[in-house]
Image (tube, rainbow, N blue to C red; front, side, top):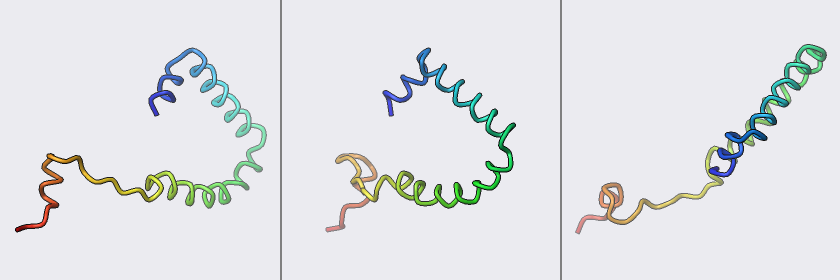
Length: 77
């Protein structure tokens, strides 16, 4: 994530972002019907992608030892 944020802060990242924005505005202005027709499919495609990337692929990380969260999860003696 750090390299991606670094790229967005660079001149090339700014140019790529502006290019994507201009391309998006062009598509909306000239192909509105096609974009709106594809919207339900894009929403359906977004659901599994959000599930995969939003849940960190199902990995559950244990809290770091010595933190209050790890001490709270310890069984009582």
